[in-house]
Length: 348
Image (spheres, one colour):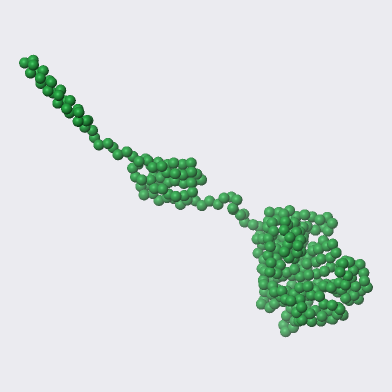
């Protein structure tokens, strides 16, 4: 009896060993969760659930499906959205502070004048909304070194960077310097000041019509000079009424040094204007030495610079350059019908 029990025990142990040799019976392995790497500047975000994480392209930004998270705006920041079908929030636009231009003060503009091949411009004065024309002394208080200036002459435009005004105790005038030489004799204003620059046409200084018109004007003054020297003729619609005016400047001095004057010397700026059925010749400024003995007078020479609307009222002002022995400047004239009046002047 004892042997049978022993054999039975032995048989049970043998079946157990056979079962163990076939390996353990286990449940199927759980599918591991997949955590993708989401690249971004200084950021990696992982999804904690089995649904895939979409990549949303953007500057230094990664979006992932996680648990609800607030929208956090900022450079180099990772954002998360919790919904199953996320709609990425609109990324804010950003303008670097260095590219944000403050609204310029356009209620005032200085008026400068520069001669060709000069790197210095004289302050003639200015224009201010509500106050009109300002003298150079009054305008100087509003001139900023941080502004740019646009300079104009017939057919040419140039821009120079602003600088601090310099005051000349010798001639009691203000100037602004430039690193570049001016390509022409020009008039300058604040670059954000809206000026009307109608088309001006240069006419040949040898045009016989205007040579004759100038001769007749001299004769109306009591005498005609021996020589006619026109320096510039400009045609422009001064008043914006569709009718052109003609501006001309002429100068002649027997003494080319700029020291002396005598009979027959002159420097004038005239305007030819249609009034009704007539054409009138109106002097803006004139110095005509009809009967004068030679004398040391250091005369002024007047030359047309441009016609431009400086005070934004629709009528062009006439800018006249002035030069003399060791001195320069300009005068601005306002045309009112048959009259012309000076509104700005600065001569060194």
